[in-house]
Image (cartoon, rainbow, N blue to C red; front, top):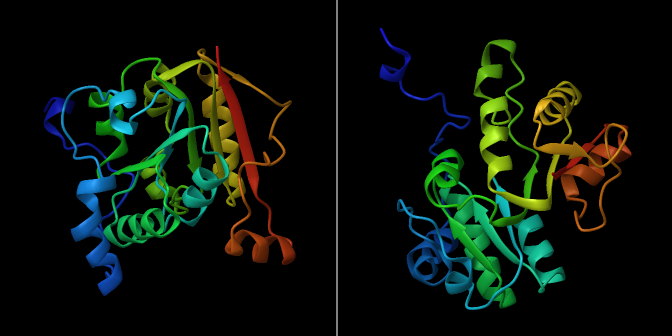
Length: 225
């Protein structure tokens, strides 16, 4: 049977997690303001944000605390976040409204399809992938987001000198990410191996607790050639 007949392997599972009343209200009332519906066709960032500014993509923003902090600290940039889970989307929509963040928009959809159909080649000033699901069991490694084909697609959407920044607290996955990034000919490492945490990536509560307990966190920062 040809491989094209098989459904794609997803890097996520849509768990039926609880959506709070506040998160549901945010999705219902704010998606039309700060959300972007999935549709085939490259986004016009200047039209979407109402201004011309560097646009940075964040893939898998979780509950959105880090994304909101970065957007608030860097009003000179536009940020486009992608997340599939409704509680996280609702949480970040709520934070956008509460903090008056005009430089942040969200898409609730699969990142691969967004990159393929909504992001024009060489249009991004950067991309962040912070703490992607490590899928720790070996039989699940095929579900990991960061694979050669995905990185090649993402690199094609980055403008020259744009940064691709991943971070993980799972050492074996960090080593895989470093190897996959290094094997992509369109990218070059900004450090001899793993990079020091850039100032723009804030420490999360979970990360701070892990560091106090002696757990590691690895940042991988490459640039588009």
